[in-house]
Amino acid sequence: QVQLVESGGGLVQAGGSLRLSCAASGRTFSNYAWFRQAPGKEREFVAALSLIGENTNYADSVKGRSTISRDNAKNTVYLQMNSLKSEDTAVYFCAARGLAWGTKVDPADYTYWGQGTQVTVSS
Image (tube, rainbow, N blue to C red; front, side, top):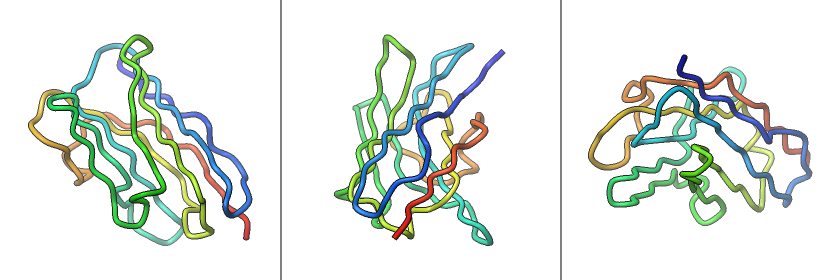
């Protein structure tokens, strides 16, 4: 059974940091991404990682404050978020797919999704 399980969300003050984890099981993937969805808003792209070429991509809203990375041995992808702002408050979802060239930023490009983890930034 293929699963993506996120963890690491929580309540943090503005300016603080969090590291989200996404543990994959059942198979390995070539492309991962993080998306987020705030109440009343559409799901939006945050960061993506393509293992082919080790490419990464970030939304402008998090660029310079966030880093997506992976640990192959643990089959886990991380999202380190620093200098958090109240507008970062959302449910964060991990997504994954098989072989693809380049990073993918459209949710429709991903086959597997985690259940989400809540990030709340207090101002």
